[in-house]
Amino acid sequence: MILAHKIALDPNNVQETYFRKAAGTARFAYNGALDQWQQQFDAWKADPTLPKPTEAALRRQLNALKRDAFPWMLEVTKNAPQMAIMHLGQAFKNFFAGIAEYPTFKKKGRHDSFTLTNDPFTVKGQKVHMPKLGWVRMHEPLRFIGTVVEGTVSRTADRWFLSVTVELPDPPSVRRERQAVVGVDLGVSALATLSTGEKIVGPKAYADALAQLRRLSKQFSRQMEVAKVRAGLQPGPAHPERDAHALVPEYAKDAAAHGPTPCADCEYPDGCVTPTDHRSRAALRCHGHRGPERRRDAQKSSSRPGDC
View 1 (cartoon, helix red, strand yellow):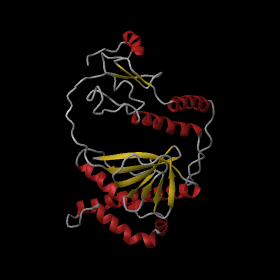
View 2 (cartoon, helix red, strand yellow):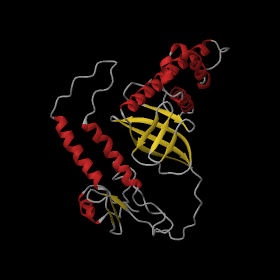
View 3 (spheres, one colour):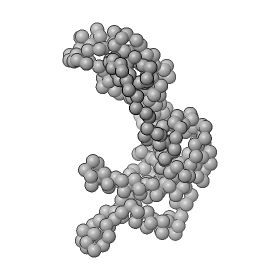
View 4 (cartoon, one colour):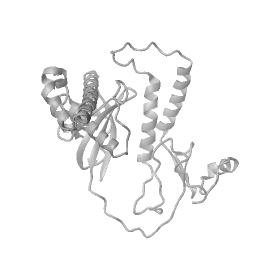
């Protein structure tokens, strides 16, 4: 079983600069490999005797060139460009299998990230050691205990996160005798309300973040956006609204992660549903088993009550 834990990082200025360089190196390698892939594929169609492009061949080609042509790549970990090309190879496999669109070029400032394998980086407590950088503080320790497979450092609204993939042994199958079912309704005053009338109170940090987001959004709508940053420069200064947009989903995920989960002693072993996203209020609703607070509003709405 493979699970991932996304943890917020707390880098200093030097470490954040390293993250930007590594993400830019990964983006450069991905776009360059995609361009070479297209050229080599067109050449193979014109002359079938030529070899088809592969991610392994592109990685060897980059390794032979980067020391002389791209010496600035040596300032960051070698995993940044290598893993980017491997991701491109997987993207083409998904495309040829018919489960994904054709890969496109990446743009600066959109989904900036780079990936590390399990060998170069180490997680210890609330810090992670990265190659050519040292120890970086994390906001919380790793939640799972197992074999670390890889880690992806990404940027969301000027905040940096580390998503650690961990391989865990498969849990033993447990025979459950009681097959009770309970409805779950996500609300506003409470995180969740069960059909039995039990209420699960959500964390106050989530409500505070929503209130701050509403206030900043209203303030931002009355202002003119600052001038665009010149081409080639780093993104502009952090805006508090962007930070609020990054915090709200994280608080919702934390509330879902620490909320009710199925267990052997639970009265509803197969009926408990854990909310996973603040946008899925209606997705997890068990029609016919609405919470007492929203049952009155549900009768007035035009939605079909349905059956559980």
